[in-house]
Image (cartoon, rainbow, N blue to C red):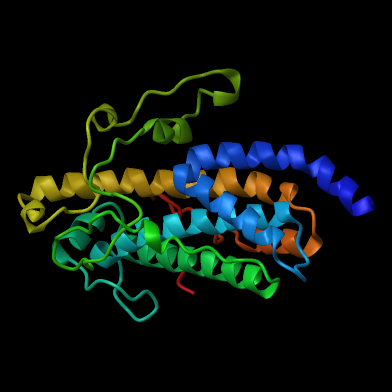
Length: 275
């Protein structure tokens, strides 16, 4: 009876979180996935998690899989190529353009990709250990890959070749005089990126020249990857641990946390350390 009361009290907040999260992060995929997860969870015997806990963890896993997909595309072309993050073979021209933003950008991309893969792997393993269904989005991998040298030719979940980018987060992040909590608004750092569709990775080898063209693509990637990292680090951790009920589920959700970063003078992004 006490457990039922806890479920009832938490149901409204869960519904609010899942509705908002599905709309912002996972869209139709997230909505379908949550429905599937709830149906399967109801038929799962011996699970120590509530249906709501399972739904939240499955949503988080789906979000991490989506992030892994976009970071993997960056890594195949512009990250460090090694056995830790298998996939593509790298593209020296794109990597050189990316490193104009920061000399360690290839390392940053590599480490973020590895992190995102470890996040959904960890959550899925935890779900499976409790008798709950893990998340698999492979049937949604229908988007094409870049045709540029270095990219794998596999189905994708995210499209980095047709982006409309809101860069106002940059001016908001850098502002010393304005505060969004007081209703201040911020202009985009690059107004042109909010009108039209632009690639953040080369679509094919034709995008590798001239030099200004590939650099513009790399600059788009810098704004896009920076915004992606900040949205996830701020929005998802804020509610996930407050919305679950079981203490081990709380531990699981807060274990998937951002890497500790230190800012370097003159850096345009947080610096990361190789593990």
